[in-house]
Image (cartoon, rainbow, N blue to C red):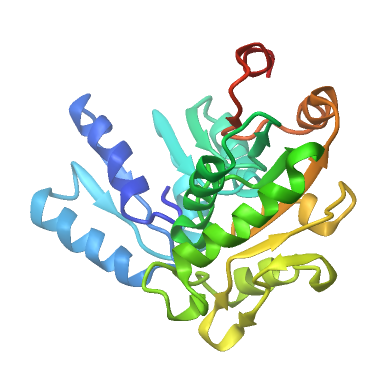
Length: 267
């Protein structure tokens, strides 16, 4: 079951492993990428007969019908909400599952971090595919002693990457549809914008956006962002950052920037 954000890669990659192990397979491309789904179907039909590898296109109804069938294994990449539906359906047949579900992947920037390196790597990982990546940095915990200097480095790096008008950049994508545009745009608190913040619904454009002075109670901290919006939170004690991360559901990734080996190993 493929997702919309990497609609070819995350469908074909698990297929390769399945074929290598001698299995037959069913592919269900995301309905949000109809052009990609048509391309996948064309390629598969050229390479395999339906009895070996079959493609089923369509919306949620098709997925639900497929989940009624008895499979040996289900591989799903997508949201935790749909992941629960997939797992519940698989449980009826005791079918094994692989679920890749994303989450609010945290980043810690310690006080001894190389700020330029951290800014470049974090923003490269965050803004790739305009933030629609399940292992993208979701938010940043930065030590209070370096927070101001780090924010300046992040703003400068954004300008270096995407120029004065990011909407003209050939390196910045767009949101997949209006629903996801509305959801992500709604997470931007204009009073807390450090950089970016511009939106254009007609073009599904959201500027690479940094948010400052974010608290745990802000809306942007309540769900996985999955877009080009990056909150920056300060911390005084590493214990506070670790405690916050441990109190929340496990994400796919955690990113650390700092040179103190003892602190890194503790995290």
